Length: 205
Length: 345
Image 1 (tube, each protein chain N blue to C red):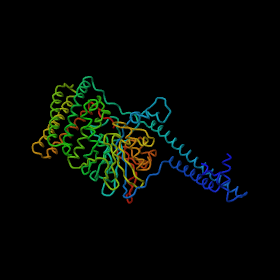
Image 2 (cartoon, chains in turn blue, orange):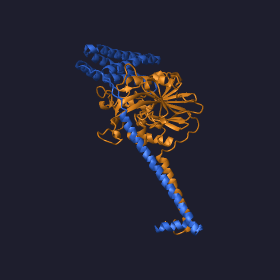
Image 3 (cartoon, chains in turn red, green):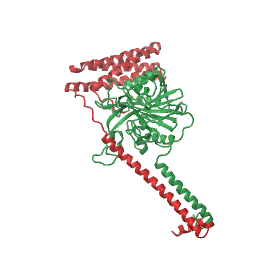
Image 4 (cartoon, rainbow over the protein chains, first blue to last red):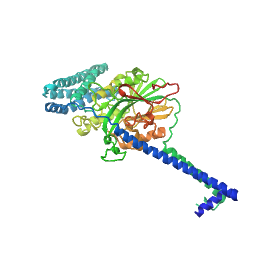
């Protein structure tokens, strides 16, 4: 406190006397006023932020829309088929990825011809194996069309792989262009089947 | 201490005291400025017009699944933990300037075979663009923040656009698919739900679309940073959401914007430093991606989030100038380049 008084008196070194003291007082009041104003500003900003946070969360909760009615549940027979096909589905997708990345890496010159050929042949072999496993399933009557669609998708992938393999024979990239729509259609079909029996296969990412 | 003391030397003390006052005032002004949000850094050089459009809404996503720090706690009165669900928009950035129309992300395309349970208000991206006076064929470039199905869909709807994807994104998917442990390599993690294994968010069709761009000679595989138009810069944000996530810096009349896709899933997350949408996320990398926006734009206001629940409201100021489009979609005018007319009806 003493130090403060001394320090304050130092301000008036050039203007001693009563008028100097008044000037000093005014300056002190000005500084104090500015500080109070600044603090009020901080306080108001904090209040504003707090208020918007509170209303935001409350509003979001209140606006929550009602859920759409769920689709009818699968019957036990349908559920059994869906589970059996799901076990194969992972392998189908893995083979599809192998096919895609073989072409992708080849086009990006990250893989040479032999590596490309090996990848496509591996994928083709996998599709052959999964086709046999899918054929071994016995779908319930209500899912026979889904079953047929799934087999069609596997066949399309096989045709796509066969087309891609021609590149290894003649080195012409247009085989890749011809193969692509086949894989594209097969990929769409996988989603179409999934929409029927695995409706939540892909979650928001 | 003695030398600088106002008590010992009145003349010197006067100077020090004035300086001290100025410092206090300056500090207070800075505190007030910071509390109101740091101002954006004005853009230099060319500036672009920017809109953000909502491609769809994912309904009722559990709060804790989106932001772990905000998991619902029954009975809690805290705004942090009293929400059960979030309604998540799927936002797409539209950037126009010079000869370019650039999309940042392309959302996803609803089909009869891809309805997505619990999604509403899906609108075709070409339809949304037409509300901005832009045709699908006008799009020259597409930058995907990452390759997940709900951000890199419908690429083939934009036949003239060159795709920009990070090399690390493609390598990350291949790494996961060939990993020896099937738990890591899994593409089906449980019946009826492909969750958080590294390759799960990429349906074969999405990768086919990326491959289609490569086959058509319409793809650039980016390795790190790249300027794709004057002032428009891709920044890598690897592992901030997926292996090859990337940000996009865009200069505008309101300062620089940084688009973040799912590295910036939540704008509130960026503002309050909370992770969001942790799929294949390294949370430190996500925070570093947040920091990148602070560094480039001077704060958090100009960070463009892909799934911010507050989008298209005053509470996410960047998107507050919005209107309603087809199927109750949303379009927000974020910034207009000089000479560009507003698209808001």
